[in-house]
Amino acid sequence: MKKISLMIACFLLIVFFCKKDKTTEEKEVVKGNLKEVVETVNGITYKIFTEKNATTFKGIFGNG
Image 1 (tube, rainbow, N blue to C red):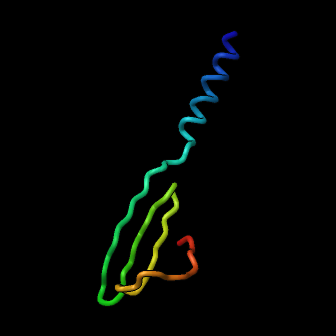
Image 2: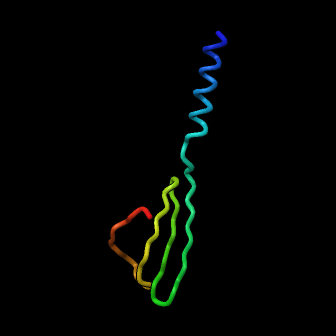
Image 3: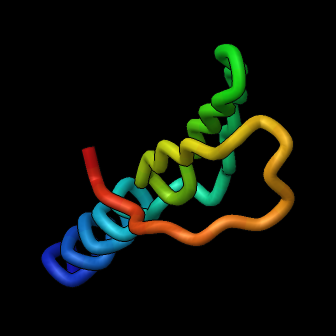
């Protein structure tokens, strides 16, 4: 009975500590005519570079 309880407790600890953070962070920097937005979503950081006044954009996202 102790072994089963210990195994369940270890499994629950592993599940608890391995879950991803659902928070979103965003930082925006404007340099001249270029706007850089840095977002972190679920542990993945994206850098998006756009024209300062752009309302829509297309592009390729990379992990850097």
